[in-house]
Length: 184
Image (cartoon, rainbow, N blue to C red):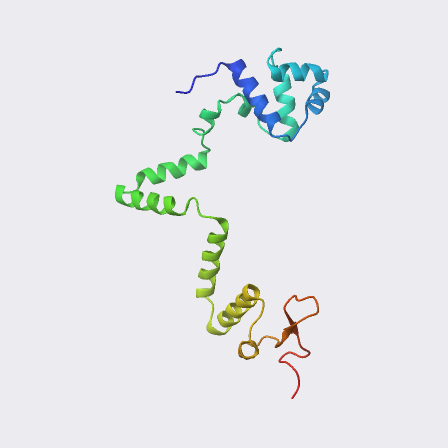
């Protein structure tokens, strides 16, 4: 079970969390607070009590709310904004079967890798394109993935025709002069 921290312990834990982000240094905090760096070091080690002024200065250096440093990390998860509270209220008003279906849906996608999400979004965009633009988009995506298309597919999709041989560095097909390949 989680032991509740008193206010001094919360302040020290919050200050340590802030300093662990490495967005600011002890020297920067000391300079901004008008204290010697050794004093900040003693505060971090727990041999000197941390002051509210130091918390205020340290959080101000990174644009954070100093009150967040005093909140126990366990309690931070329970804190919600007014918009989040409105969402919770709306979700609680849904029929239980609808809410369960929505939660199951979220459980399925919550840990989805960004690449998978992007692929699904791209597929959805492709579905809504007209035939011509969709064929060109699919051809372009194949080109990007495979490194080239055969000349007949390039011509069919209205793409520049490429020479099948790779360039000198072996980077893949070279574009030939003209939009639809060499003149006959």
